[in-house]
Amino acid sequence: MKKVLFLTLGCLLAVMTVSAQIPALERVEPMFWWTGMSNPDLQLIVHGDHIASRNVVLSYPGVKLVAVHKVENPNYLFVDLRIFSAASPGTFPIKFEKTGEKTLIYQYVLKKRDHSAGRAQGVTDKDLIYLIMPDRFSNGDTKNDSIAGMREQGINRAKMFSRHGGDIQGIMNHLDYLKDLGVTAIWLTPAIENDEPSASYHGYAVTDHYKIDARYGTNELYKEFVEKCHKMGLKVVMDLVHNHAGTEGYTISDMPMKSWVHQWPTYTKSNFKYEAVMDPHASAMDRKLMLDGWFDHRMADMNENNPYVQNFLTQNHIWWVEYSGVDGFRLDTYPYNDPDYMAKWAVDVKREFPHLSIYGEVLTTDPLISAYFTQGNTVNRGLDTHLPGITDAAIKDGIYDAVMGWNGGEGRLYDLLAQDFLYQDVNRNVIFLDNHDMSRALSMVKEDVTKLKSAMTLLLTLRGVPQLYYGDEILMKNYSNPDGLVRSDFPGGWAGDKDNKFTAAGRADTENVAFNYIRTLANYRKNTTALQSGKMLQYIPQGGIYVYFRYDAQKTVMVILNSKDTDQTVSTERYSQGINGTLKARNVITGDTIDLPKLTVPGKTALVLELIPNNAH
Image 1 (cartoon, rainbow, N blue to C red):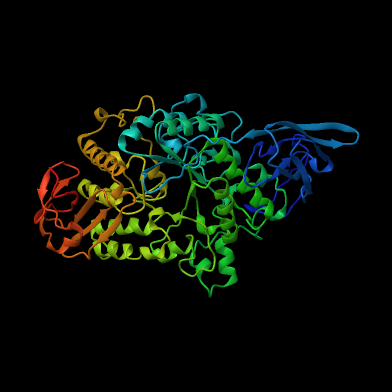
Image 2 (image 1 turned 30 degrees about the vertical axis):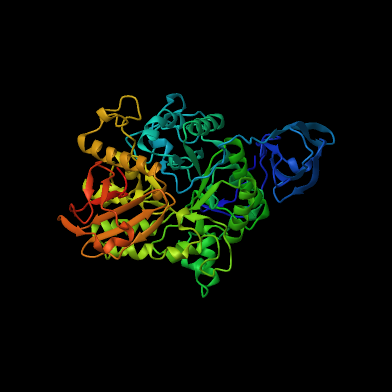
């Protein structure tokens, strides 16, 4: 008995043999496709025992067999099809013939594209994204807690790095909660199969690109989830991992070719240094380590220079959008990918779905580095990445600096926003306070709820697309070392939980204070275009007071942060350009009307004031 493996010392090496255990025709991917795609070309990846020894035969009006590629591993064929505009939806057999042996047949289905309104609509600055780790939010179906045949069995909520049983049905059960909170878009960490032997809950070691993890549900349930969200006015962001894949996936454990992943003589990690990609003086080895080094022993680094890998990934991502109707992609570990491929990928995807939104994970405190990865060649990179926006980690740090008085305090946030000219459109950046890899917001502000409210105020009133991490609104806390601590279960998501914090009755008083504050501001933002796409006017901070305005033709909103611990009286004369003669304003949180010439701002507090036109009654 032989097995195709490239695994030595945790690294994929070029040792090729042939498996006698693989079924004669294990899979064809994409398993079905659609007529009417902008790109008529489709490359099928066919996997099966010695499948390369067979001839491929098909006949269907409007479909042409262009080429059949045999690669190093005889268990693979790559089949190029051209689907002309005249092709009609239907089913046709693809035959794999070999003299003296039974013909293998795959019934390939071409479907009609779904042009229903509201699919792949894009996530924009009008939205508020809510990030959920499916395993940690709510267990809606206990029958899928453990799946026979998968490498990690059972659930153990007492251990942070074990599976806890949350699933897609659990999320669907609480969409009303999210809608009420003011959320308009939901980002799930990858729900794709991660059939790894341990810590498989996080989702970033994909083992089957075309399958929702059975412990979360099914492909059909995921599609139902997206459709239910759309009916409720919620959008869905899908998390993609181009850079790496779980080592237990069939394309890794039985690789088509040595160049499917980046090979090293021994296990070699990335240097995790963005500058090696940017630096015009960088050594070739530093750049190679950054782009080709591995993230982890269990995460094989995909070779995106390989055209077969490119087709495999791009078609898979297009497949998911057309199948489910998701509205946007969050691109994991964006700077570690091959730049030329990612630029081509973005063009190919947007050609099929012009309104789909895309943003890349770029974790840096320097706006210049962030802008380097965004579209438009704004910093003279010499390459248009076609990446509309990034995760704006610089603004995250700036918000904490302003609220906590770190690193120049509110002046640091001002300076960061003053660099927005670097971006083609800064409103496409996603701003946030925390996520599944970072210390939670409450812990970052030393569990000071007043300061948390100020941080949330800045998050929900600054430019860009704001993102909340599940549970921040109910004061979930903890630090990211180890990161499992910030991935706790949402209380009330499991039958038998002591507290159900999905309800006001299940929350403590301080938790309801935080929840109601965020809910009020989030829903105000949802109905206020000035806080979505409006222009911004900011003033250099003075004496711990930082003031900015968001405005459009409909409204003007004034935000005042007092970073000091004590109350301050603010004269508004200096801000006459933004106030524009207005005499009164409404406190968005309390509803109180206040006079503008002078106002008192409590310590550690941010006020959100909607200016009242002088002619208003």
